[in-house]
Image 1 (cartoon, rainbow, N blue to C red):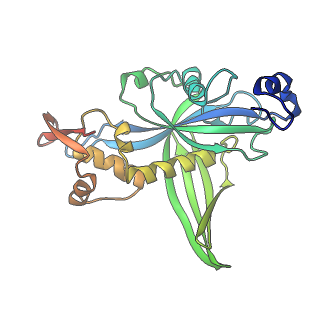
Image 2: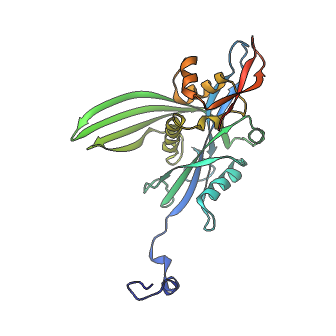
Image 3: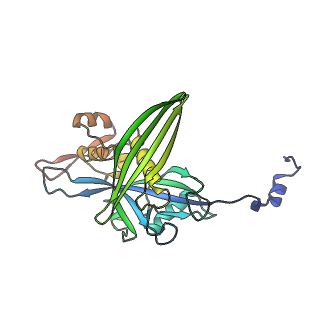
Length: 290
């Protein structure tokens, strides 16, 4: 088949000049969430769990000494998924972690160096896995406790629709550092069409637009946890119902009664003939039912 210039595909490709178009740079960034478990001194209580996110400290310009997600520039001979896995291996030494594509970010001035578009990947991991325990964490790579709280919620009428303005405080902290940030989310619904904009109101030493990415990541997890089995990625293979409930409450930032939670998870779990010892009585163990 010939094109409008009378060329075959082979002839067209032989004449094609890729330099006639500008080429932006392309990166991938990996957003990793994990559950950290702290041993309780009270045998009557469950071990305390915290949701964490992995950040790296930049050692070069731009945004030197800020905290960012692990990422790499994509090579010409690799796919997005391959680049995402390479970023984990090079920047964190993690291997064999499930990642799913989150969003692509392409704001014109998101990188001070040049026009850079990034595709982000989201991963949930159980830190008790041996491969995670052995991974290096040093002064340039740290786990941060993650907390998000609603500051304000406003709703106002606009032409043919409604505008919602939500503000959230995002605190990232560990034993040495506290990063206090504020995100604003503007949701416009006009003629039954909804658009969303995420703005950084206060950025406390987080590079690029990675605070937006972190917010969008937790929003994705909260949405998916309601209809998928994503929460089980944060747990060991065998767990108690109480431990599973802890994870749900941590992510959704809400409490469930035991009866309501058991109805919620339905047939997603299967009991096994094993028990978790400790406390006043053994606790029945379950596995994820695929």
